[in-house]
Amino acid sequence: MMTPTRQDVSINQVIKVRQHSVALFKRISMEKGYVDSWHGHDWHQVIFPLKGLLQTQTKHARFLVPHTSILFVPAGVEHESVALSDTRFIGIYLNPAQLNPEHSESDIRCPTEVQAVSLSPFLRHLLLEIERFCEKPESDGILRNLIAVLNDQFALGEPFQFKTMLPRDRRLKTIFERLSEAPAQNQTLAEWGEEVGASERTLSRLFASEFSMSFALWRQLIRMVHSLALLDSDLPIQAVASQIGYENDSSYIKTFKGMFGITPNQYKKRVLDEDPLFAE
Image 1 (spheres, rainbow, N blue to C red):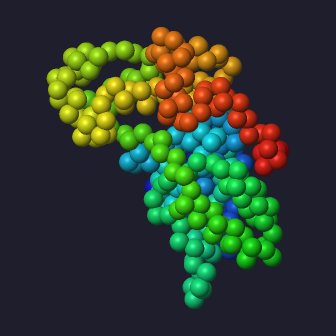
Image 2 (tube, rainbow, N blue to C red):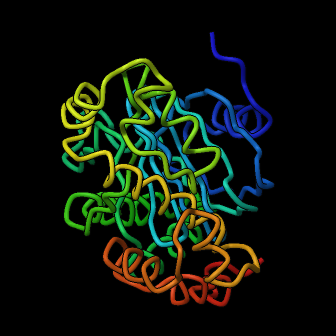
Image 3 (cartoon, one colour):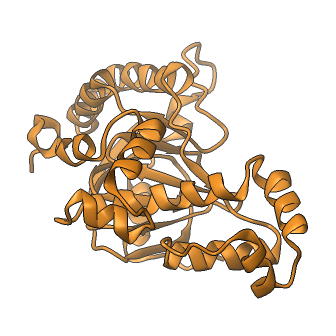
């Protein structure tokens, strides 16, 4: 049986009391380094950081959730979340029993797997409307309609493809853990092989088999993940680049833009708290 966390106890207790509600809306704050350990919910969950960077892990994948995306976690799926920087996020909890009532033609079939989509202005305002109607039981019909639109956005919206598959091979796990702690490390694959007890050829084959990419691209992915958390601090771009192993900031900026479609400075300036949706 799962051990509930501080955040988990609160929302799951509310879910038990409000089992006839269509949805619940909760704002949660997590300090950098806080771990919301393995847990699950009887309701679907939509996770959206207002500020900071959240990493959510399931048994098979690790999802990066910056404040430019939202993540859907189906009911019953165990997951663990870690705040990679000081993070505030919205949790929307959707009641499957109320979304799929018996003998109803308005069946809302939510995703059956964890998935992420990029946040659009439309999605941002849709979340605001869902929050507004969550506390109005007499408006359950309107709330269901809004959730149906949200569900469509998961089906039709732009996927946020930034997830890190967790290595299965023990040698790759060692490399993953080491690079996650210190992404600036520049060992070659042959040097890593000496440390983990495998040839360069074997490791290269494992990376291709598990991730469909080379070691160099995979390490670049790890570095970009790490840099997102650093961008939430007051560090200048040059310092961020240096801390993740880039000799100059121009190379880092080029790689970042190629991966996310915006520059690091543009990412830093996306302060969504200025939007009325995020006002306290």
